[in-house]
Image 1 (tube, rainbow, N blue to C red):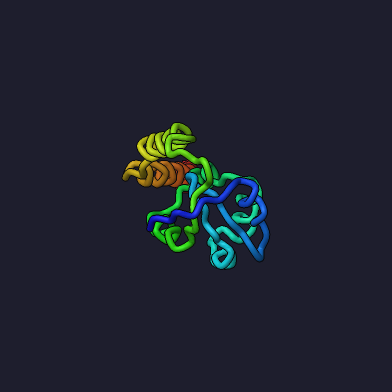
Image 2: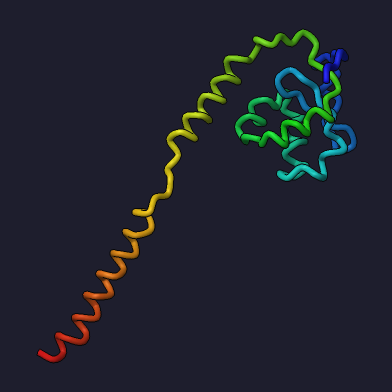
Length: 138
């Protein structure tokens, strides 16, 4: 959906309340007023992001799903006046790169992660059993 309406930063800053809430993400302006109550993170998160100006960094740090990103299209009302696609793109790419590295280096649960604690527990139980039952006979 291509929206040609352009908004100035001063105009956007007037829309930061529960009754009228706009967000700027990647240079696009979204009217999320009707979504405040439905937002999984709560309305305060969106209100805070709206008041802080550009919500791009906050949006990317959370790591929204593809479903959430597709829902955004319905709230798009325009773009920020004077915003260029390259502006802030390096920061956006750095956030994405960091997330990819985090996912790549994320620890994965293996069978050893489950077997080792059980094995240690079994050895401890065996030692306790031996000390309580066989050492009493001696």
